[in-house]
Length: 160
Image (cartoon, rainbow, N blue to C red; front, side):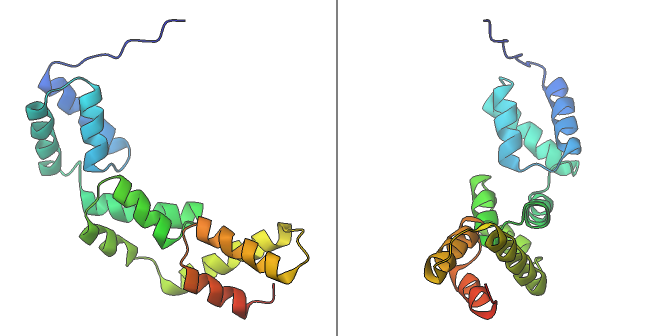
């Protein structure tokens, strides 16, 4: 089977228009846009020029991206702060912006989400031994990106 050939873009104006559409569709990090531009076959000078023009046109904003990413992953997927932080680091967002984005998560809502996740998982666990059960619930919460001490506190306070 033939794999489709990647279309190379040589005109900077066409690449800029496509990049604007790419950024307008969904919030993107600078690294995502940079990777996409390189996939299109553009040279380094053209890529950096397009990135700066997208920032000037407010199509690309790292802070806005970090906040949208944090809000989406927390509200939609129920991720904890550790997993969100790792995701933002993977997208090359600066540590200052990561910290700023994580501050928008309400502490009460964060604990409620963790409690709800643990209760939902506890309902599906067939384990009878309380120590193994607690361990499995804690591991589940950690895999979702929640902090160890917070998870231990929620498990201690709840009757699971």
